Image (cartoon, rainbow, N blue to C red; front, side, top):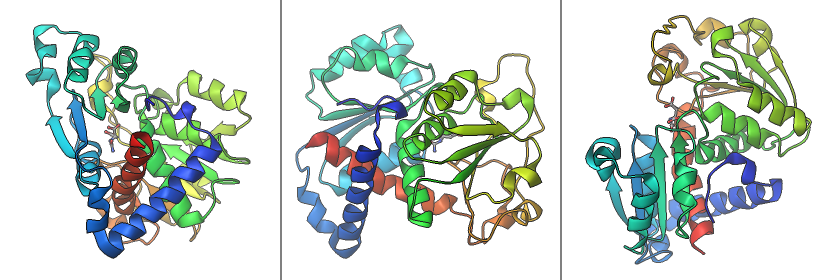
Length: 303
Ligand code: NCD
């Protein structure tokens, strides 16, 4: 089973994955050594053509905590044979010869991870492809929503920041369609607005959405605010954008007490550090959840 897009998941699969995440998390916090036998002797390859802190290291630690070995290249764009002109298909065919149990790939071009998956039976996990998707991030995002709200339906979710070039909000919007009654508010500047393919996806699956450029109005009655950084590395040549919305203490005052603020990280300056102590700020917990969700995901794929 490859993990390439958020649209491959059903409500049932998500609920099973999050139940498994809860169980792995509690086993880990009780006696973490027990989990070491789970996938002893198995091998995970991580092949990253783009920078990463959380995704690569949480996959690696998730695997290590379940007894797996991890073979890693963190700068494949420069140091793998891609720099010599090798296609990702050939790279995948070669890695298959080493009998890994799964391969996690991040790539700077949309669709490249799917090209690798098309030529191998080894499970390929998309860890972010260009401005395409980041399905495992959206899994941990949904788990974090569950962690706080104990539900995935009937939520008002504000997506903000760089919705045009960021892949995490795209995948999250897709997963929100697996549950009933969610409403999405896109709160950003026109230059960074969510692309039409996602809006069409939402239309097709009956999820309502609106564009609300005013932060105060967008934040009113929100259950979740999901903020993202300007993806400077993905802006077309010659395009400069300085102005994005920032969440500061004042912006937090627009939000209900029960709301949560999430961010896939890394944060640059779009959420001020003065917000970090607010109990509604969940972005660091969210990153921690990433490891447990990835343990559950690997466990599901490897079984
Ligand atoms: C995100 C990504 O790589 O898309 N990072 C992550 O995996 N947590 C978000 C980003 O880089 O802005």
